[in-house]
Image (tube, rainbow, N blue to C red):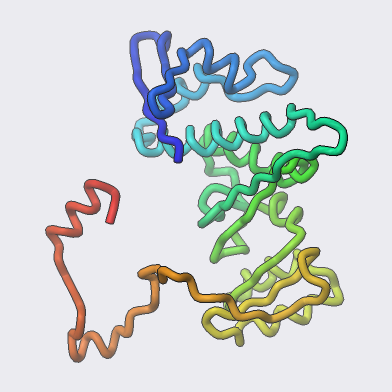
Length: 250
């Protein structure tokens, strides 16, 4: 895990990026990380901090989140792009697992801030060109209808769990060939843990049952009616919840 922190001083002269104790001065950040002055125009550090300075709604957590997504994805893509394997060798493949992708890879980018658009652009670039350099995306979302059309059009494999919403079904259908569109009608009938796999990774479209994780997440559906009646095993600890919210951990 990479952790970022932002330190501010007058006139944005000494902006620094902290990565587990390693510091990059503002000028080095522009030159080494964001490739300022290269053939491709990237968002440089000064632009980045001017943008967030002028936006009263842009808090520190959002700054770190957007900086992390943009810088990490940009660095890894550039490293893979400029890597030159010897004859008979190849780049080690890297995959970005993008959970809740519709939040930062939206279909409608008109409401995104400039920095968010820059993050989206690098993901679009990876989806279109990354496979040549050993970089790929694993796009995870419960709302495929809200995903960026450029990115989903580049998906070679689809693993679809139960979908009942018509807009989401239509979005998945656009990623399939005409001969496979009929599979969309089976999606609402899938049970928990069942999914349809389609693409280059499998010879024929197949319904499979996913293995349960060794450590199951605490995300199973709560039986509302039963718990309202008997209250069995339920908790409502507001104080503990507030402490976790402040710490941003559970």
